[in-house]
Image (tube, rainbow, N blue to C red; front, side):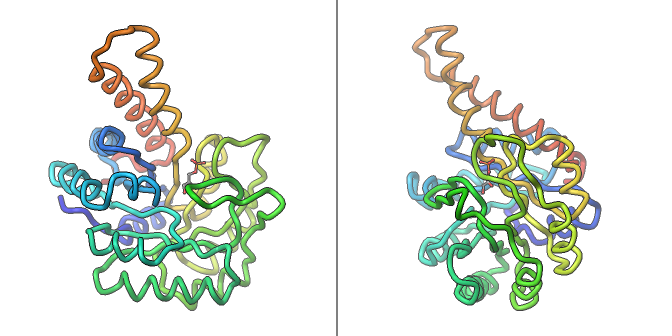
Length: 283
Ligand code: 13P
């Protein structure tokens, strides 16, 4: 299969009340683990790349891995640029072959957020590339974007409606009480707000800060209209621990062994999430 945008897969997920997992990858091993997990469970999947990861490897190697993995897969796969506030990086990803991008202008005033998102849509639409945009401020650190607890604020439903009616985005990420990174206490999810925003905008919602949420939280958010769930921190832990634990237990200086253990840990984490999100068998 060729790589595709998120548009159709998210519309379908929204219609049938499940969510597609968007998994932040770090390298070829983690990308392969994500695709193999989706393939094994016959699930659509979103390969998600942070700006830092893209700049670390370069655009061409990352898109080449994704194309090669997608070609050999039978499930629907999108490659999506996560939280990006730099239009140059977005343009480079579009030119390289990314099928989906996120413009994160959520720290800017409302009108500027709209203007930058509109610009992104103009860049993406001619190539049928899907666009995700954010409103409100999601607490925590994601890539180069740091939002302190005192600066976090939930998306305002009236603004959300105006935002989504002005912009033909494919996926909307309103801040609704989740956080990037490891949760310090019980997250306070604004379920009413999710319900109202999903109902009044009609746009598939993205649930950011997926790591550490309980099954119950996932089920409720997905039932209310979250059609995309982002998982990053859990995979960072699996990436490091999968490798290090193997090495500490075996002390064999054959790097392919801990890399294999890392792959298995990542694949298991992705499979666990795909099952939770209800996208198994929906490829
Ligand atoms: P976590 O790191 O909390 O899983 O959040 C991921 C995310 O929302 C990426 O945009």
